[in-house]
Image (tube, rainbow, N blue to C red):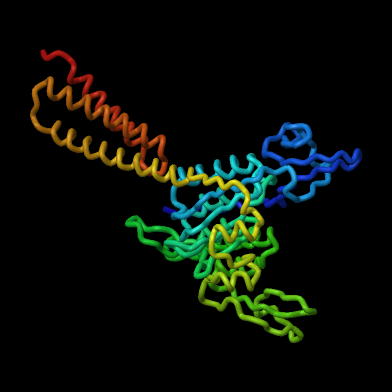
Length: 391
């Protein structure tokens, strides 16, 4: 399974999680929050003064503050591999729903080794394409101790990044998996040309996510490509991140961040020092204190975790049906009385129907629905033939 066959570099728009709207011509002032619902060129805005209204936001000056927002924080958690479509859908929907509730901010707690880049890009799009909220990443530590690979992309998509001690961010090279599930280098699996096309697109994507929030794009590229060297230099009292080949004689090297031959992975302290992350904070409570939200209502959205549990139940059901089907097929090969043979064929037919239904509802089962349907058709033909009266 390829983590991503191709990448689409998204057009990342600047976000606004504004609460005060001032009309440029009339000086009318409204307090509230924009939703992601639109009607033509107008956006639905929930206001204190007029309730829900539609505004052409291009005609309003928008000031970012908390006036008019609901005093609550919605917490989402990504604490698994990014490998399931059902979890990705659940997180996309949770972000959209949370944004439209007008919270002070959405807190996305992250602890993941990464996973499929196509799923990660969908989650990044859900974060970056909404202009009515602020999403804070908290790399909390845990089983995976960081936001790695595709997880780093999701963290970079957020408006701010806080990291607990002993967590890391980076190590985002693209990989694929062999038929037996072993990780495999893209160059080994597909050759240098395909590997470089993927890496080039993924590098650019990481850089665009970082630069969107004024983070060093070259450091983000070094997380993807082990051949990128990065040094920090000082010039005119400004810090610059450049490759050594671009250094001038007047520039003083302050720090070497990435050496050729290894992917960039930053500790929490290094991420803050380099400007990739905003601050080292060790707990959810400390994040809330730092963002002046300790008095806010805390709402835990666990839809992603519920989706994972739902899939596990579906997988168990699928495997049980396959086991039942295999047993019935084996029994049908033995000589049976006609009534017994018909009962077995009906059971086989029902098992195939249920397998097809599960496979359609849960793409993460990675089952060939057409093959199941072909087998069902064959069983149906056998059943209809077996029903015919003997001559």
